[in-house]
Length: 111
Image (cartoon, rainbow, N blue to C red; front, side, top):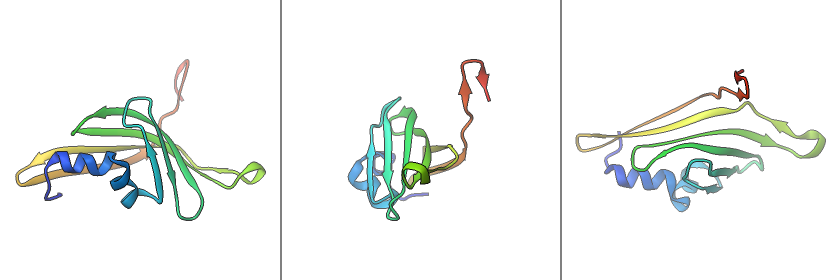
């Protein structure tokens, strides 16, 4: 529960200046379906992702994975799907955040 209106919570998860304050050192986000997400972490690694769903004031869903190192020492983390769901709840906003393994889809269906 967050003691703020849904519009303020939405801004905190989509406005770059606010998002980078709590998600990572530097963030790039295009809050539209197919938009890019890049989070540079303090340890030098990064997370790269793709926005899957945007319902302004209600839902933001993306997939991402961690990348660390470069060249032959590049480490690629498992892809996960992150969902931020916002609901009015009395005097504030209920923010539900889930992260789960991403389902990979090929031309023939889910893998």
